[in-house]
Length: 201
Image 1: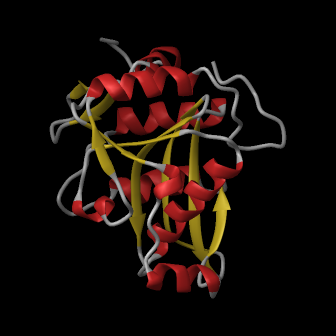
Image 2: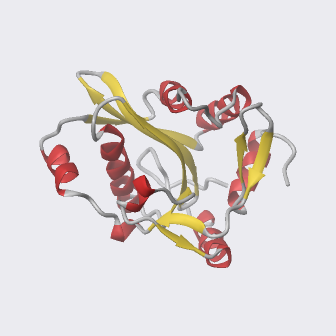
């Protein structure tokens, strides 16, 4: 297991299916769930109401314009958060290096929802999402899936199953299957931003 949140160690951990979370005391834990929750990109489910919100352009979607605001909003939860100051600093560092990304939903330029995660090769590891307006985080997730499809990504890892994620077609797969998919995905040259693919490793 890695013993720090240095960028190289954090990227290595993600590349083998391990990620960090902090408990309510701030202590860091490294997790590798079995089964693992993913969303199959070509089986992503969009409800009628969400499809309508997208069609009506209820929200403007942006990418990487407010990464720190997104992670702060994700951490601001009344029931506590696993995003400790140490974790926040680590992901901001990954963002500055081009590996962590945010997708934002806006209304009249105001940030009202979004998500963030880590991209390595053809894999995106979703970390957290938030919303201040109905459907704002869902629109950001739909935009993420479309962006991944457009750019040749093959794996959307969402770590743990929740009822909220199940509505989008999330499934659980055995860790052995996940590791096979992960190994293939991280070796790809997909680019989350920019016009040309790049080697994330």
